Image (cartoon, rainbow, N blue to C red; front, side, top):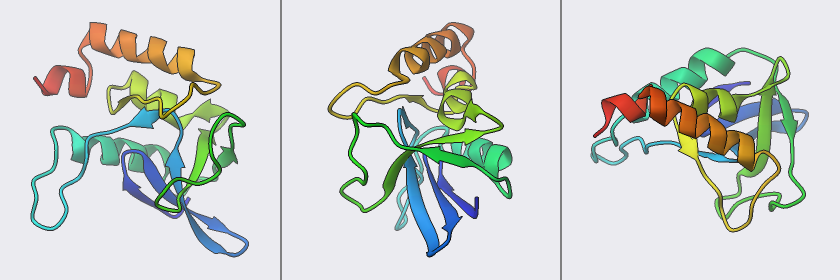
Length: 130
C-alpha cells in the first residue's frame, strides 16, 4: 500500500505503477478540499486507515455485484490486511459507516452489524460527531 487518500480511498502499487482503490462497503466523512472545512471525524478516519495500512502488503478482491471501477476511475475493491477486511475494521472502530451503492454487496450484513455495534458503543465518529 502506497498512500491513504482519505478514510475510504487508498493508492496501491501495481505492476503497472499505482492504482487508486475505493474500498467497497464503507463511506467516511469527507476531508475538506479547496479551502472547505473537513467533515467531523474526516481526519481521524484517514489516520485510522493510514495506521492500519500504510507500508503494509494488502490483498485486493472485487465483488461480482459491484462495478470494476467507479465514475472517478477508482478500482472498487475489498482491501484485506492479514485476512481481515480493512473496511470492516474501520466501521467497527467508528472511523466510517456502512455504505451501499446501488446494490447490496457480499459483506453488507457484517458491515451493518459492525456499524450497529459501533453506534451502540458510541465509538469514533458515533461519539464525537453529534
